Image (tube, rainbow, N blue to C red; front, side, top):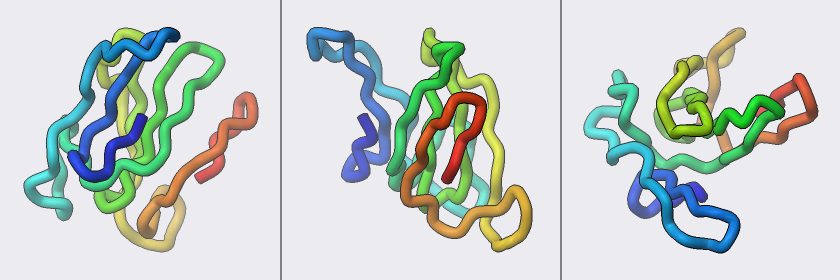
Length: 99
């Protein structure tokens, strides 16, 4: 669950019990640390149990494995390929991720 007010993402088990909090509030959205979020807005899971998170005001996407370990991130602010302008959310269509 994306928690925009705390700039974190919280994970829960199937019964709704809290498991782990991902991220810390961003200190500088111009060059965010890989652990920082600044208004995360979308969370999805893919067929390989990866957790994919859109980080709206940091203008990038972060990918975590099922153990909530960061596997990678991509994107930056702009309007060109691999650039984003305030990601609002995403949808997962099999092997395609639409933001």
